[in-house]
Length: 427
Image 1 (cartoon, one colour):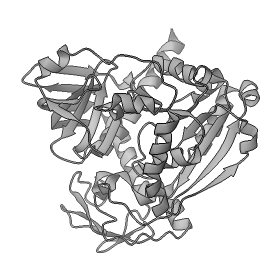
Image 2 (image 1 turned 30 degrees about the vertical axis):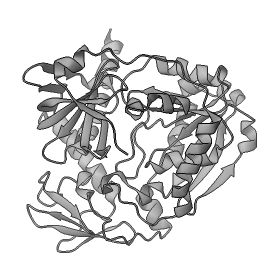
Image 3 (image 1 turned 180 degrees about the vertical axis):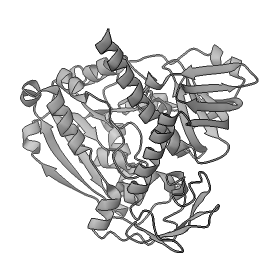
Image 4 (image 1 turned 45 degrees about the vertical axis):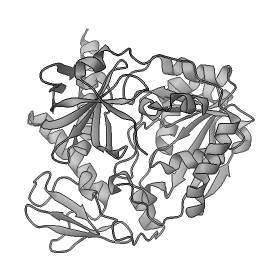
């Protein structure tokens, strides 16, 4: 997929009116059918099937549907398993750029990733109660980077209790293995399935405590797709399976250098010390010329998170990288406004650029994570920050900083909320 872009000055972009809120449309049956047929070709390629569990408890609906987020294949799965049932989709606002009428007619409810949106709850209530339409939500918001669950918002149970509708969970298997985010949209030959089950009836929501609902949802989103691949002996023998692996495994555990790993073909190599690994057909890492520090990719990724936590604790964490800058103000285009520098440390983000016209700061407690993506709309890797009025998309010009930025944002948020809680206790 691509996105409509337009090159204008920063001042011109800032003078544009901000996004206009609109109530969710009742999804068009015709467009939903066309979308299902159009996306169905992808599912035929992967021999798709769906297992349904306890769905008789969900009733006729409408439902509140939660789905894990692995790849673009998720959307094709949703249209297939929900065929004949109207549903609105909570989606990222950039999905509407250049095609707002079409996407809203399909039932899209736009929101900003990892930005507080006070209208979203009322929009979901409107869809459920007025449109009589189910609502599909990816609570992780961002695709999984390493095949494990992306952090979901705390106290999601509060929202589910407030909505008072049956909660259905759709869990995919094979979608990540087929099209992992780091692999430059290169698809592998992998069978894809899903499991669809009723988690809660309205009565169960009413009689279950929020923390218990959250615990059940957390359990449903506890995933490890590299382990799934190994346990199920799913062979991926494509010669490009390690392409881009450096995007998530950016730090060498042998020489501790960052930004010098290179994933290419079936190998991951550190250009600094020469340590080389082969990614086998079951997704494991085998040392070529070194004793492997890690054989399981999520273990390496978890180690990188701990390294960042240590840097934050020591006060040494920082990011300072030149970037191209785009602005999202409305649904007409993504506005390319110039260049600048993105800085991130224990105090949060600072973005400066556009010949001194742009200065934006964002504190660590602004969001529990940050919008980060690879080869975003086939333009490049991005880190996005901002507000409901304006989103800034930063395309780093050097280094593999996207994964580290997301990990650091999550750890800094945890610390900021911990400090806030302590301050409240003392007050």
